Image (cartoon, rainbow, N blue to C red; front, side, top):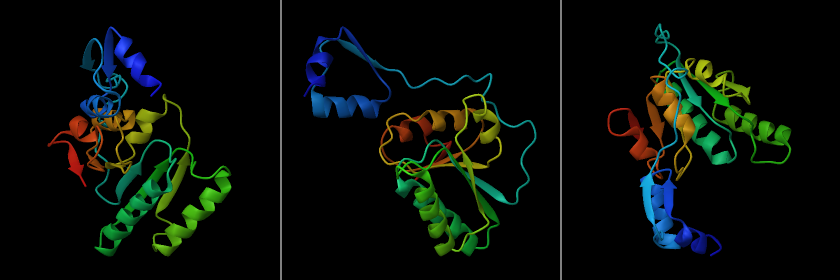
Length: 188
């Protein structure tokens, strides 16, 4: 309710995605002035495809960004377990902090217990937090970005992965489908 008068009083509104515009219209009503969609930007001088392709095996999946909800990690680990059961040599890189618990050591124990239960121990690497300068080289370590967050409005990590030449497997929700399109990944 507090946002509604602000939106109505703005001369011009930038939305991060069409999903954001549709959501704002639904919950706040239309803006009072003009508007446009302006997706998050990425510096394509820094985010570039690898010069040399990665070896085909193992297939390296990356769960990028910060892990603020446990379901995101669980979905990525379940994906890895499915690939391994189907005979694919695969690994999972998990970036960012595990933030679904106040104490990160508790979240890490929960994550490791889930990984062991999924029978993929030794195939998941926790890389921790990273700087924006480190992001391009991290993305170049993977074959595929897994983006498991539901209803993400306009995730920078997806745009960075695309600029780095990675296909994206994602939750087909939020603004991600309009970012990835039909040719750069698969929505689930």
